[in-house]
Length: 337
Image 1 (cartoon, helix red, strand yellow):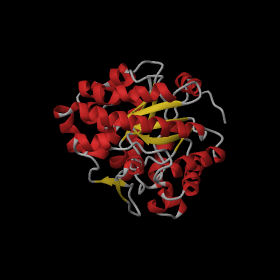
Image 2: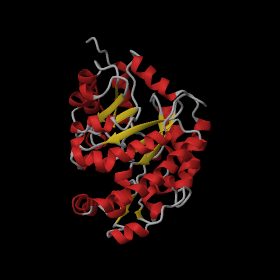
Image 3: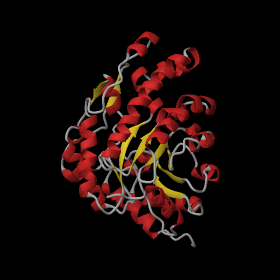
Image 4: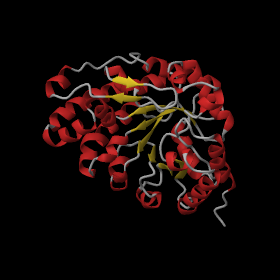
């Protein structure tokens, strides 16, 4: 379905109705009776998982798996897979300037990337009543998975030119990956850049935002948008830089207070966040998640461009009782009380 996504953002902001868009896909495993390992290995199961979630909850959009191991695996990274947890990258692939120079940019379709694109192409045929977003990693966070966290943080100080060379390569791949999702029929991407939250505002601009901006300028248009996610505590000091990427929507993690973030977000940009995905969705109770949701809405619903969400990807083992309690609280919220 050809949706005008920038108009969709404007309509969300203009609406007086309280709606939600949590990052929700992996908990479908309990409803489908499958493992995470099975889910990440089968595009048809992924599409069915997205459809299953869409039938269960009144989210404004569907989001594909936020599996941030896919892109690093394409470059040659080693993935740890289990039956009940989201996959992770183990170790580092590059550590020296020479290794970074030799690193080959993979084609989209390498590893599981083609499988994930195919899952979205199937999902857009199954889910017709709301936008479908594809999940993907951001350029600095991908570089961090290739070099490992400690290595890239040190390199930002000691060998910034090496980091920039690596970022040129991760950005090039991610541009093509996002375009593949666009051709598959996705309405946009949710780009997770969690490691940018470890950077100072100055480094965040140099090593993350400028590269995210390249991707946004290449792929975003009236029909396809980028939702940028940063779950770091420093994000509250980086809003100008993050908004400067041009992403149509910004998504913040639970390490920040959304009441501190919202005054800094341009009114035409949708801002999403930030109920704790682990502390509340997975570990909380229906009562605690209702209270947390109502409290957040009470603080932030006064901003028309605020949309409540999870602070990050909701873990696979999260109970559906908690997920439903979140949506019930959103549906029942009265801003006039």
